[in-house]
Length: 261
Image (tube, rainbow, N blue to C red; front, side, top):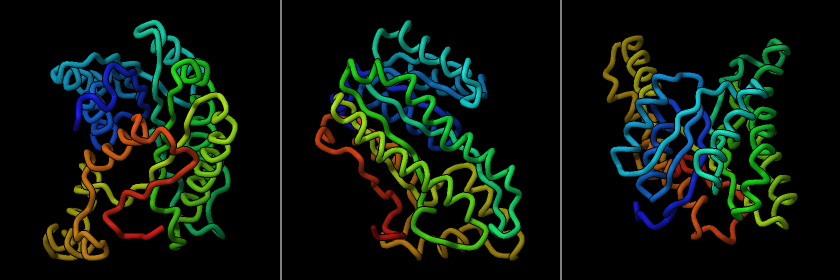
């Protein structure tokens, strides 16, 4: 990662977990950014912050439940007080909606999914608009390849992610005249801890190796491999960087060619 891409910029990242969240923090740091890290798990935040500092960049860990308005306000204040500016916001926090057919799914569970995956991201973005307008910064929404299919049990998931995409596009229209870009990335499977556990689970259930499960899924992609967290994170770094200065309102699929859009 070229260290000048985000040199001396400040990037706020929500949903910092062991997979893509960590990858986002590390790749932004390698590109020259200081980072503000938000998630509910304080211990994990500290671990990722330490990695960033070992790269030579600054990191501030802010335990945050993005469904808590006061916690989000505290996050925005901490970012401003720590660095005096914000150049980018990555909305990566996510809660899996109920995976049931729409004809049977609990509607209250669907509403809770919307609260976390759509409305909380909107609230967080609104809090950072003044700082982003001042820096002529950008927002990246982390979406999903679920946008590209309509498989059974994924209806509530697709509804939430489709709403997130529509929200990003409208925000791009609203914030563009103020110098703020808003884009989306849509990963498919990401080869990280959670997926590795799931493939191991499937392998034991079927009496095959986890490598066979991997190969079967990789076979559905043009590149015959599943993207790793750093590879997805690099697409976000691009969207945050000056290389994407004329790009807004767009959705970039990062899926090794599983879906074409």
